[in-house]
Length: 410
Image (cartoon, rainbow, N blue to C red; front, side, top):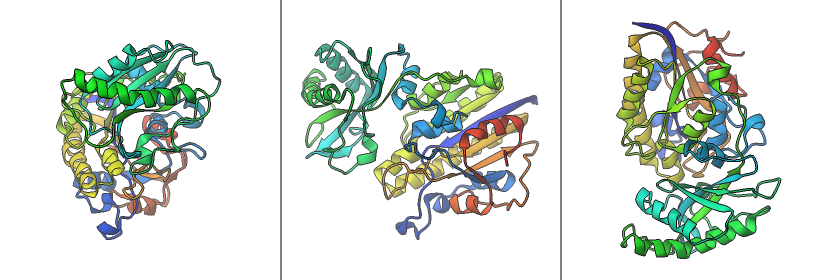
């Protein structure tokens, strides 16, 4: 048996929610069958943690930065530069990076922020054509995975970033009024409007595949920022390990924290992702010398943005059965392993976007994790049960240190 202490974070992106009328005014976590997460709740210490500080916009970028141990109020510089790190894009101190989604607008409405989960091959053609069309010498477009791509503005000439809106925040709403404003907005809007023609031309180059009905597909620019400067977890706590995810954001934060991305074939970021492959990769990493793994599953968040109740329930149940269960069975091979289970933020089905409400977390350690005075144990993992334990962490960025030290800061 491996006696070195191990730590694994199991993160179900956007799992938390509000009571849903169609579910009898219960949350998806209350309704979904989650025997493995319930088992963790019954054995570990559960509570609520606030991942989004006051005054900070709720998002997977800020929330996950908190969970990695970095308070966004101090360390957040924008979402896009974190993702650019994982894409191998070198950013200078004066450069700015922007997320470049490919979206589907129908009659001016944000119909689909993923453009039908566009094929990566087609989105690569689009990014190449954006570069070839010479929109501005300072702009560079980089293909990513599916609808998630990147724009880098070299030597960004302003002190402050423009105001932008994540496209998943306005699903089903008129896009007018949400286009970039402020510093540099004129050029960004020019790019977005010109992209409609470029994407139409790219469709011809792609021999007509991935045809979309309704109004033209467009790029949507948001999440701008400069390169962050944070002290790696490898230096702060002596950790060595990896990130397992389908999205560049998690790997980007991980790279800044000194962790190595671990690819998993078939990891899509949607309900068809390779859950089993992620769990197997995590256990293999821990067995082969890593002492820290951050395993992230995106599908509950995507389902929340879609407002799809059945998909959200399915993604939660798949996460429980295909990730949490196998990981709990697998860590029996280690003498001392600590598990942190939580979402990064709620993605309520009602609003189809992120909220700043605190989220339920569980910390379980094989050798035991001390519960605070007055703690009320629960045998189910969900928002109401977490609230009833009496544990509230106002700054989720302290949880990382709690995992290392073995006690909550209460």
